[in-house]
Amino acid sequence: MPFPPVEEQLAVIRRGTEQIVPEPELVEKLEKSPPPTRRCGSSTASTPPGIDLHLGHTVPMRKMRQFQALGHQAVIILGNYTALVGDPSGRDETRARLTAEQVEANAADYLGQLGKVIDLDAAEVVPNGDWGLPR
Image (cartoon, rainbow, N blue to C red):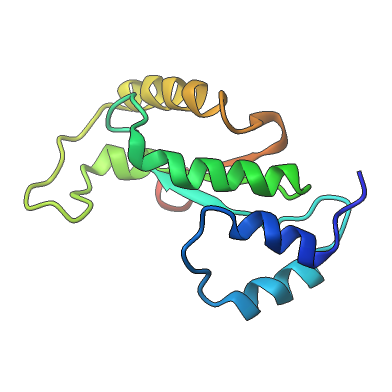
């Protein structure tokens, strides 16, 4: 699939966006992204304490899908380690720690829902436990 020129990509990326910060840096990354698989897309991080996606997930999911439609690879950072340690994510109280089995089940459900919007076969799913869990 030939990649659209940078200006065409920017027109798509700007749709539904109030501001791109910093846009010149995005332009530079779009120009430097090497074919055939460009990894200059959107990424999202999510912790699977539960299994439901909500309205707050829709903006990054739709933007990620737009990047995929332009030929870029989506990178999904899955917060499996974060769910195991009970990260409060800006809350006053720490979330309850989940078992590895609960996190795995929640992640599978989460990815199943995400896969209705994102092409998971063309995405890279990176569990943040790869960085923090002992091997």
